[in-house]
Length: 74
Image 1 (spheres, rainbow, N blue to C red):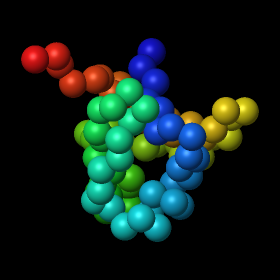
Image 2 (image 1 turned 60 degrees about the vertical axis):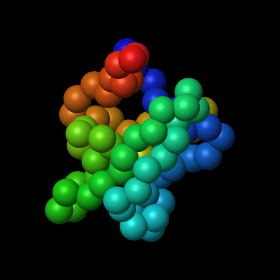
Image 3 (image 1 turned 90 degrees about the vertical axis):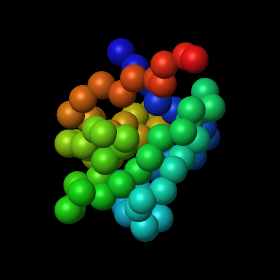
C-alpha cells in the first residue's frame, strides 16, 4: 500500500487537465511526481489513472494501473 499525498489541495482529474500537462507536483513527503497526458489518459509518473475522481472524506483518490514506489535512497 503506497499513498501519495499532495498536501491540503484536492486535485480532480479536470484540474490536472486544466493545468496543461506535462508538469511536476511535489508530494507531501517531498518527492516530486510528473503528471503527463498519453493521448486522453492522465499519467502519474509511469502509472495511468484508470479510475479518476473517487471522492473520499479526506480528499480525492485516483486508481492507478500500477503501484507508485518512492525513489530509491542514495
